[in-house]
Every structure is written in C-alpha cells, then in structure tokens.
Amino acid sequence: MPYVIFFTVVLIGILIGLMLRGKTAQQTDKRESDSFYMKSVRIIDSLQSGEGAGVENLLAAIMEEDSEKKEIYVIFGNVLREKGYIAEAIKVHKSVLHRPNLQDKFKGWALASLAEDFRLAGMLERAVRTYRDAFNLNPGDASLLKRYAHLCKQVSDYEKLLSLMDVMAKSKVLNDEKYRMEVAFVYNELGEQAMKNREFGKAETNFRKSLKLNSKVYPAYLNLARLSVEKGEKPNIAQKHLEELFRQVPDKAFLGMDLYLQISPHQFEELCHSLLNRNADDWRTRLHLSRYFVQQDRPDAAFPELIEAMKSMPHVLLIHQEIWKFLMQYPKRRDDLKQYAIQTDRIMVFNAPFMCVDCRYKSSEFLWKCPSCFGWNTFVESKI
Image 1 (cartoon, rainbow, N blue to C red):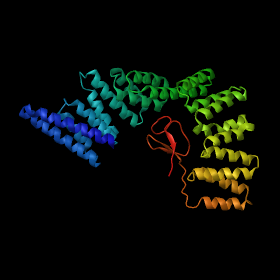
Image 2: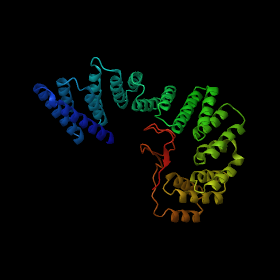
Image 3: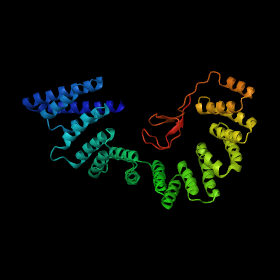
C-alpha cells in the first residue's frame, strides 16, 4: 500500500504540472488534454477504491488520445502492478517501449518497470533478460540496481549478484559494512553450490572468503564443518570449526549442536554448560542438553533443563513436545508432571517462533535466507 500511495502522489503531481503547462496550448489541444486528465483521474479513483473494472479500457483510451506523455504511462503501469493488475501493467509498459526514438535513460527506466512486472508474474527468465537490458542502458540507477540484485537472489544467480554489488558499492548504494555482510553471504551461497556439485576445493575457498569478509556469517562455519566430515577428515577439524561458531556467534550455537554431538560426544555436556554460563536463557542449548541426558538415562538431570527452557520461552511448542515425550518415557515421575502443570498455567503457545524482521514472514524453523523477501540474516525469535 505505501508504494501505491507514493506512485499516486507522484502521478497526481505530474498531472498537475502538465495541466499548468497546458494553459498555453491551443483550444483543440486543451480539449484533448482535459479528456486525458479526466480519464487519468478516473483511473486513480478506481485504483484507490479497489474497483478494477474498466481500468484497462480507460488506459487504452487515453493511450490512443495522447502519445506524448510517456512518463505518465510508465507510472500508470507501476501503479497497476502494485495494485495487482500485472497483466495490464505489462501491456502498458510494452506499449511505451514500442514508441520510436526513446532516450536510453528513459528506455532503461521503462524496461526496469517491465522487468518487475515479469518478476511478480512469475516469469523469472524474462525478468532476468529484461533487467539485464535495462541495466545495460542505465547502469547508474540505484533503484534498478537494488531490484536487479533482489531478482538475482531470488533465482540464485550469485555470480551476477557479486558484480552488481560491486557496482552498488562504488556508487555508494551500499555502505562498506552492509556491502561486506552481503558479499560474505553470497560467497557462502557459492560455497554451498560448489559443495552440492562435490567441488570441495572451490567450496572451501568460498566459505573462507565469506568468513574473511565477515566473521559473523554463521552458516559458513557450519558448512566448513560439514565439508570436513564429507571429506573424511579427522573429527577435530570439524570440531574446531563448530567451536569457532560457538565463540563468534553463540546465539546461533544450536545450529551446530547435533553435528558436535556426533563428532565429539564426550565433550558435549561440557560445551553446553559453557554456553549456559554465557547465557542462562539459552533455551535451545538446554533442550539439547536435556536430550543428551535422556539418551544416557539420567532423568533427574534432564527434566530441570526442560523446565528452565520453558521458563525462558514458554510459548514455544517444541519445548512442550519435549516435555510430553519425557513424561511418556518416564510415566511414574508424578512430581515432574505436577511441576509442569504448575509452570504451564496461563501460558500461550504457538508453533512459529521465528519471524523475518523485513517482511514479517513466520517460520517454525530458523532460516538464514527468507523465502519471502530473500533477505539474509533477518530472522529473530518472536515473543509475546
């Protein structure tokens, strides 16, 4: 909705300017211009009120009447797209691009608008081609750069994304810190692609490039540890990568817990206690520690960890599920059941504890790339 308001305000401003400029025109031109403005106002009114019927016919009519005001048609198309009329937006933008003698800068702008139409319509290959053409005509447009980069994230074209980000950094679209963080995550993605293709040397190089740019890119530590296991190296190598993750980004330690337990089970309890000494509210570490105690048949040590985890994050369904499993496995522990009942009094629970801070997308799993807005490192734990 903010985009629609923005486009509408811009469009109205242009219309007013054209109306004022048109006062010196001939009477015939004035009548044609009045007809154009009235139809434009009707389109704006229809879009803002949510009445889509007739919008396409009105657009076709004003485009037949006046072929000069090409900038307004591009904005019309953008407003249509933001209101959900993508097919109509494509027609409008294509009609503008069919006009002769367009300047490169304007053509690049119109092509970028058409490319965004294709992207939202799901025609990603056409969107990529059209954005490429727009960028070649207008490489200095900051808005185009950002949207083209967004599409590259969406289609996982990370090589092209790197080149675009270099341009963005040189033109100050990204500050140095933001640039280093974004590029670091791109190198991690390139490493994952190489790892899938079993190009282990290339994968390791990219993961290390990622961490050299930004030591907080936690998936790179995980991927280096997994790569070490995949290559059959000594367990202590993968262990070192995970311990570096726990040291650099302790709030993401839970992502490497299962792998650490697999390669170094005798040190797992010590690791958990060291993490809890740094953050007593780390409920995920308590959950892993509780599972470890259950595997060793140590219920007296396991249940207190579950209760402490629930106190830290009472709304997380996963914790309650772990407690239910525990009580079913040890049905004679009536005091534990009583304690759980007391603690859960008046507690609300839900099953989507993670949320993207950019687009508010919710997930039951922790993700480092949002599947909705494609942002990196945007997930946080939701709290009531």
